[in-house]
Amino acid sequence: MSDSDPALPGPDRGPVQATEVSRPSRGRSAAVVICVLLAALLTTPAAIAYWGQRTLNDTTRYVNTVAPLVNSPEVQNAIATKVTDAIEQQVDIEALLNDVFSGVVTDRPRLQRLVGPLAAAINSLVDRQVREFLASDEFADLWTALNTRAQQSLQRLLAGDQSGVISLRNDQIVFDVTEVIDRVKQRLVDRGLTIVRNVPVPDLDRQIVLMEGSQLRQLKTIYAFANPLAQWMIVAVAGLFLVALVLALRRPRLTVIIGAVLAANALLVAMALSVGRQLFVDALSGTTFGPASVVFYDTLLAYLERGRQVFFWLGLILVVVGWFAGPNRYGTAVRTGVAGALERLGAVLADSPVGDVGRWVAPNAAWLRVAVGLLGVVVLLWGNDVSLPRLFWSLALVIGLLAVLQVLVGAGRAIPGTRQRTPAHVVPTTAE
Image (cartoon, rainbow, N blue to C red; front, side, top):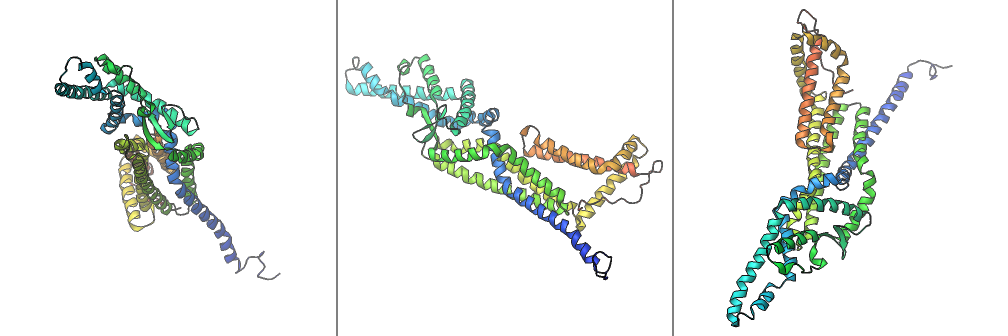
């Protein structure tokens, strides 16, 4: 048997062992790259799908989202214009006044001078009553009820049912304001304008166009594909990032990459929102609802916009954390300086009950830091109300708890009775 036999130790065995060791590393690196690429591609679709699933499918969240629109001047003006026009177009005030006064005032010029101001006054009364109703608590309650039914109608519409407060008419998605018109007519009758009691209002005048049928078909296709997966896509994206982080050999560098991916996707969502807003405004341009289209769009997608801001700032935070956790000179200097100062503070407390706690914390510091990070995630996501203030509060909580842990570590590693620290402790990097 020769010296070069692979079964025997020899000079040729070193390279073979190095190759065998490097194969798992290449496999892990490939898995990390695949996970990060998939997560990067799915982040934006997952965010939009999650918004749709949580907003359009959840009646309570939808109603809470659109509730502020009841106080929007643009929305009130759009509804007031539609309701006022619907009533005035069916009631020829001047013709009615001419008929009433024709037997009393025989002088035609004098009759016209009388009818004109009276007609203007009645039309002004109609407009005033409409706007007073839209500013009332009664309309606020009606708005909540209408939007509750609207959300349920929208779900049925996306599933193929074309009836309800939101329905498909003449290849257009329309919002029915029949109840608003009926309430206003009753208020006018109560104030003596009985001529509007039995005025028929055609269906066309009772509807506000929201979008064209072609857009509905696109929306139905997206809904049918995304709705079953919507609530799981965001979880899958988070899982992919987590798996990549666990497998990575250089976690600080990967943390920077994940932060950059999140920030880039936040910018992509911002661009999608901007394009979508313009398309929505263009689609409603020239309609009664056109002037209110921007405020309606921004309000309806407010939850997604808040999520986009959180994504962007979370990405920047991860970039900073990854950079300071890395093996670079400045990051190492900052980590060592801050950890040393906190441990020296802990060493002063070594003879107190803090030292007893610290002696338990010191050997368990690694998993306690992970627990603190998970707690920050729970605080951020609790109640599905992600926002920038919630992000910064959770960040402050994590930083504060990590600082307390480091103080306890210092107290646990100090020698009781001497208030002297053990040999200089260097906080391990998270590179491995």
